[in-house]
Length: 395
Image (cartoon, rainbow, N blue to C red; front, side, top):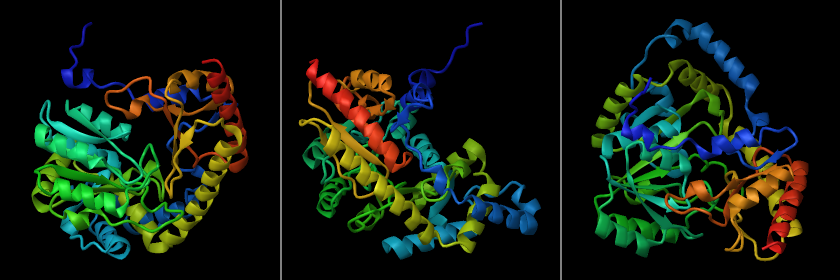
């Protein structure tokens, strides 16, 4: 039987990282390939207690259909946290609960993109966004990023020539690079963007995982009518519950709700109530502090590993938070070729290729430090450093 799949889905590849994780399933392999929060810090007992209380007090309600916008009290909690942490006055009606922030990307693509419409993405950029917008057959316009943020000269040229519908950014501890846009870099980007009709999507799944430095001001402060924010409990509570949210101006929110209703009616209500109960009964900031203390030690262990085991000529970022470190090899070394050499040495990473919309055989790679303890990081970095040395010697 021949099944005539749509052109839309036929153009979208499977997730590259999911395929790599299959290769790295060998228990002897030390994997820096995942982008997962550390399961050892999932608040299992607290979530179990919250779940029990939800079933005891609202069991039948929790198992019923719910409104598309999401639980009102949970949205009020999110709005309150934006006020406390970012100084943003967000109306509850401008918050929509989603099935993870990834659904927020899908909904934005659904309401804004026609075939061939332009999307500005960071280079390197989050592959989940590349995959989500590819479904809507977007035309990607990559803009290089540095420790300051986007290359605004390149961005201005794209805005003038291509008139893109969306600019997508992860300005805090970016995936995959780990960098955080400076305040000056954010000001420069906002100054360029405010003269256009392009909508900015500010994705911030890692923003509360800060180890050093000061929090930066949201684009929503600079461009309130032009910014959509995505958030998630996946990295600060647990990803399996799939509870995220999207914050958008009134006109955009109206269309998002329609798209949400067409997609799944509403985000699973039981998970919303469990998260709500967890937040009511527990100190979220204390929980986040526990996570960040450990992640910071793992980050430092990975940096020490680079300094101790890697040859000269290798560059890397020093993230102030998040879960990733980005490495740049000498330009004549392919990270994809290095991946196979590393697997032979029982260590895995993600080659940089899937983080670029149009470049292949790049010399960059992503390392995740959140899921490996300090001893494992030291061993894994020794193995990976050895693989890099061999590759450089055999050029």
